[in-house]
Amino acid sequence: MAEKPNKTSNELFRGALILSAAAIIVKVLSAAYRIPYQNIAGDIGFYIYQQVYPFYGVAFTLSTIGFPVVISKLIAERESSENNFAVKDILVTSFVVLSSISVMMFAALFLGADWIAGWMKDPHLAGLLRIVAYSYLLMPISSLLRGYFQGINDMLPTASSQVAEQCIRVLTILVLSTIFVHQGYSDYVVGKGAVLGSITGGITGLVLLIAFLREEWKLFLRMRIKPVNFIKISKALVFQGLAFCITGLILILFQFVDSLHLYSLLRETGMGEREAKEWKGVYDRGQPLLQLGTVVANSFALALVPVISGFVQSKSQFELLNKIKLALRVSATIGVAAAIGLVVTMKPVNHMLFTDVKGTITLAIFSLSILFTSLIMAEAAVIQSLGHSFVPVIITIVGVGSKWALNLVLVPHYKIAGAASATVLAYMIMTVLFYMVLRVHIKKTLIEKRHVLIILKSTVYMGTGVVLFNCLFEWMTSGESRLLATVQALTGVGIGAAVFVMTAIRAGLFSEEELSLIPAGSKLKRLIITNRSIRNHE
Image (cartoon, rainbow, N blue to C red; front, side, top):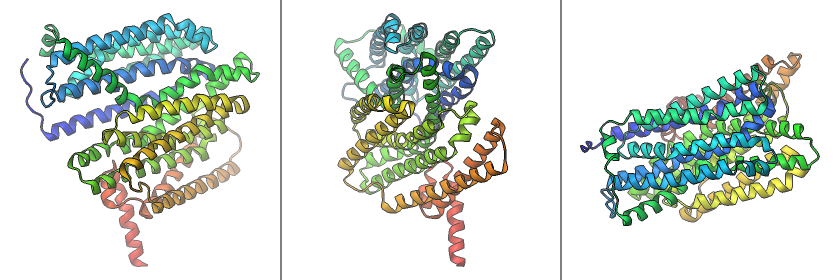
C-alpha cells in the first residue's frame, strides 16, 4: 500500500472540525428523536424503549469513541513510538480482541436476556434485549475501520458513517413505531420496532465505511502478527479504550442504574404495574432534555481542549491556566443558563414537547443535572488533556455507585422526584471530585469569585424576567392548549437567553480575546463594544 503524503496542519484542523461537527450532529439526533417517539408511543412505550436503550448506548459509544480513538492513536504514533508497531499488527490485534469482546457481550446479552429482564421486573423486555444484542456483532469491523481512517487523518469516513448510522436509526425508529402504533400492535412490539433501528443504523454505518475502502482492502488480506506485539497492543486497546470512552458513557451508565431498578423500586412503593411503567416513562422525559443541554455546553468547552493540549506540550503554565479557567467558566455559564432556564420554563416546555404537564416538578429537578454534567464533561476533558486518563474512570465508578445508593434511599419516599434528586446529587458529587483533582494538579484557583457573582447575577435577572413573563402570559391567556404552551415556552426561552447573555457579557464575564476562542463568540463581542460606548458617554 502506498504511503499517504503528510497532512498539513490545515488538513489536520479540517479533519478535526469534520469529526467534531459530526459528533454534535449525532448527539443532537440521539437526543431529539426521543421527543417525537414519546409522542407516538406514549409514556409506557417510552418507558419500554428507555429500559433497553443503555445496552445499545454502550455498543455505540465503544464503536465510535472508545476503541476507534485508541486504534487511531496507535496507528498515528506507530513511527514515533518505541514499540514501532506495523499497521497490520495493530489491525489484526484489534480485530481479534474486539471480535472476542463483541462475541462475549453479544452472548451475555442474548443468552442472559431473560435474567436481565427478570432483574428489571419486566419479563417482556427480553425480546427487545435480544434484538439489541446483535448491535455488538457490528462493533469490531466498525471500530477497526473508523480507527484506521482516523489514524491516517482521513476523518470523512468516520464522520459520514456516524451521521448516516444515526439518521437511518432515527428514521427506522420513527417510521416503524408510527406504523406499529397505527396497526394496533402492543407497546412491546412497538418497542421492538424501535430497537431494530440499532441494527439498521449499524449496518448502514458499516456499509458506508466499507465503501470508503480503496486499496486498503489488500492490507486486510495479508495479516500476520508477532505474539509480543499482540499482548502490548491488546493492553493498550482494552485499558485506553475504557479511559477514552468513559466520559461518553457517564450519562448512559446513570440510565443503566435507573433501567435496572427504578421500575422495581416504584412497584415497591405500592404502585401498580401500569402506573409504575407510566411514571418511569414520565421520568425518562428528562433524558433528551439533559442530553440536549449537555451537548450545547460540551461543544463549547471541548472546542478549547485542543488549545489546552497545545499549551501542555509547550509547557506554558500561564496560558494553560487561563485556558482551563475559560473552559470551566464557559461550561458553568452555559450549564447554569440551560439548567435554570429549563426550571423556570419547565411547565410549558413539558406540555410543548411531551403533550401534557405530568412530572413537571420532577423534570425541573432533573434539569439541574445539566449544570453538573456540563462541568463534568469539561473537567474530565481537561484532566485527560493533562495526561491523567484513568482518573475519570475512578470518579465515574464513584458517581454511578452514589446514584445507585441514593435511588435506594430517595425513591421509596419521593418516587420519581427522588430518582431525579438522586441523579442531581450523584452528578454533584462527581463535579466536586473532578474539581478537587484539578486543584491538586493545578494548585491555583480555577473559578474566580467575580465571575461566580456575574453568573449568579445573570441567572437571577434571567429567572426573574422569565417568571414575570410567565405570570403575564398566563394572566392574558385562558386555557392550557399545546399551541399556547409552545408559544409560551419558545418566547420564555428567547427572553431568558437574551437577558442572560446581555447581562453576563456586558458585566465582563468574558474578554474579547476569550470570546474569539468560543464558537460564535465574535458576534458577542459587539455587546462588549456597545457596553464600553455606553460607559464612555456616561
